[in-house]
Image (cartoon, rainbow, N blue to C red; front, side):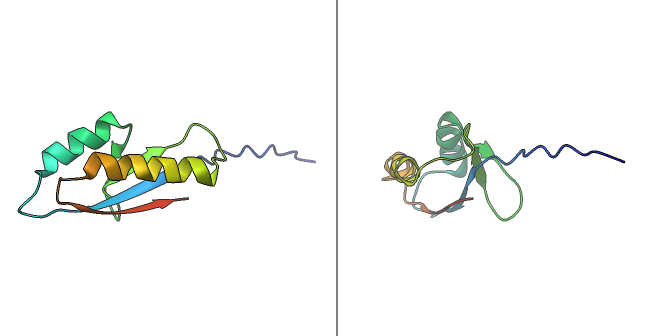
Length: 85
């Protein structure tokens, strides 16, 4: 009989999609800002991803982090969409 050990490697991730304006900060400026916050550049449907250390992060911490992203991007004339799963 085979015995299998299932290891969960689920890590919560926050995905960020950026919409740039020609009147705002350059993409490279935004990239540097977000990389300094711990985001990694991504390909595909999202521009950046942040990997959480803990499996389960509370809603209050997620809101705090979204506020931090909002503050960092203020006055840059970019729009962002944020999703955590």
